[in-house]
Amino acid sequence: MRRTLPARLRAWWRSRYDTGRPLPVVGVTLGRHVPGVALRALFVVAVAGLLLAAGARTTLITELSVAIAAVVTVWAAVRPGPAPAHVALLAAALLLLGSAAAPFDPAVVWLAPLAYVVTRLGWWASHVAAADRVELAALRHVAARDAVVLAVALVIGGAAWSLADRQVPWLVALGVAALAALAWTAVRRDDGEAR
Image 1: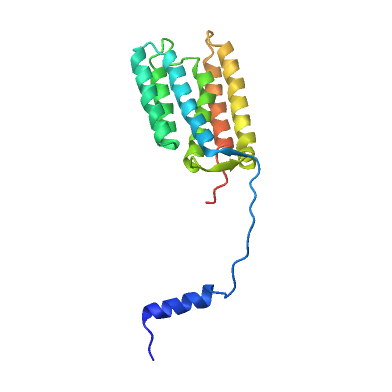
Image 2 (image 1 turned 90 degrees about the vertical axis):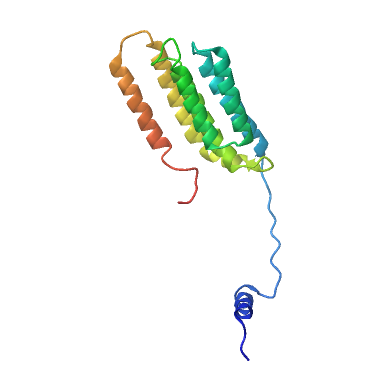
């Protein structure tokens, strides 16, 4: 008696995966956690804060900077992720080009840590649904690296801010090299995703 291909596939599947016994009951506990909607809300607030802070430094039409901030913030609320985060960073940079101190506005050194926070929250918002919960242990896993990046950026920013009115081109080059080295060493890996 010859069996058809679907019957053969079903027989193979049963022989491979059907053990004849029920699966064990597995208990899962969730430790202290943060709701996913909170991470998304923080992302939206950070995007709005970055764009409004950059818009406050510009000499362009105020309504234009508020409109840009509103559009990108609504996009971040509707579709949170890396794309609105990167567009927010680009829009903030373009708004800072309209500053009276452009092209080297000293406010950049204070907005850079906020831009990093926007990028990180964009990553989390894209990986967590609003109804999901993120255990604090998962957030602590990358918090040390993020804290180091923010602390070093703030120290460099404070040093640059204190020298804002002086002519020190070698220090600008050194700061750019230090920030590039910091970004390369601290952010060269993803957040534990397998490659």
